[in-house]
Length: 124
Image 1 (tube, rainbow, N blue to C red):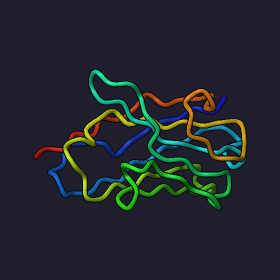
Image 2: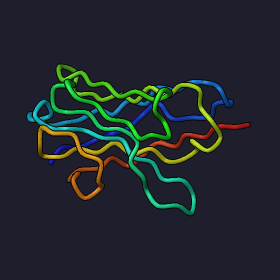
Image 3: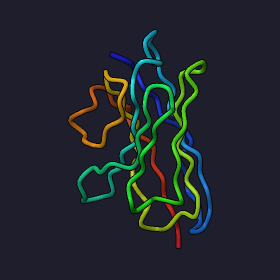
Image 4: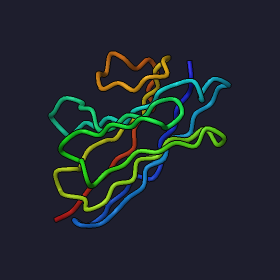
C-alpha cells in the first residue's frame, strides 16, 4: 500500500483559496488513480474529486465544480486540490486517497489507502 500525508489545510475567510497537497510514498504512485474526500462534523464522508493515473481524466463533485480542481505530479508523487471561492459549508476534514487502478473513481470503497486528513475551516 501507498502511504499518504496531506498538508495545506487551515483557516480561511469565505471567498478565499487554499491548496491542499498529498504526498505519497511508494514506487507505484504513478500507476494509481487518486481522490480527495471530505467529512464535515456529524456528516458522512463524501467524494470531492478524483484524477486518473496520468492526470488525463479528472472529475469533481457538482457542489465544487468551477471552484475546486485536482492535479497531480507523478515525478514528485503529489496530488493537489486547489480550492477557490471557499464557502463556510466547505469546512471539513479533507482526506487524500489512492486506489490500485489507473481509472478515477468516486466511491470510497474503490480506494484502498487513505491519509490522516487535514482540517479546512472557512469562516463567514
